[in-house]
Image (cartoon, rainbow, N blue to C red; front, side, top):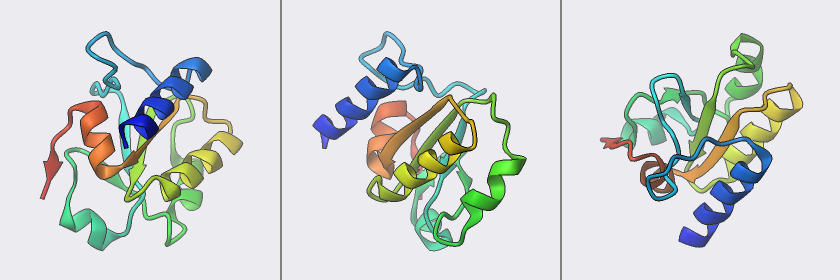
Length: 119
């Protein structure tokens, strides 16, 4: 799991998609960063990162939300395993978004950002 997270952070840094700070490889989750949870409403209700916005990938909400999102903003995206967040970030990249980090799972996202999981 740590190797996957390390690979995501390394790839993001190389591609300029993520903002890593000097505190042990944590992902910058400042107030300006938008955190997207692309899981289902029931998954979100069971636990999510504090301050995350629910955009249900399975219900097609990511694709429909893209025109409403700011392409200049910084986004951190997570799901249950990293599959949906990977698909969501790919859709966003195709739409011209450039400042996106796929954090993988909820637990990996919490570890990478230091944001607590709200249950």
